[in-house]
Image (cartoon, rainbow, N blue to C red):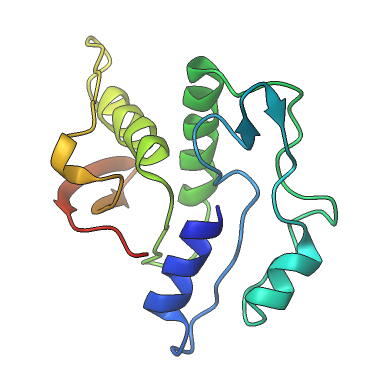
Length: 155
């Protein structure tokens, strides 16, 4: 999530737009190294580095609380939940900055909801480098995947 927060600060940091950090928007797999899992940044650590962000939904102890690395089916279920969260926002336009693998799961769910007789598998293109911009629109109870644009990662 740290890279997403840095990207958000770079893109929106000087603008007068609300920036909300959601605990569901972590990278596929969660926070782990080898066989050890971590909780991720806590609320105060985020506030120290990103003071203009709304981190009210982040717990003091972090945002990742599984006792194992998140599985692909668990991530797919989280992507479905994220879409349900996003459609309930009252704003007509919102930006969501997430990791590429999670965005693939969200895009797969968008396509699957519109084509219920098929199963879709989306794979990262090697040139995508885990960074890109995807436009999803939600209107009249229909999701539309408009485009995906790859770019070099921000370091």
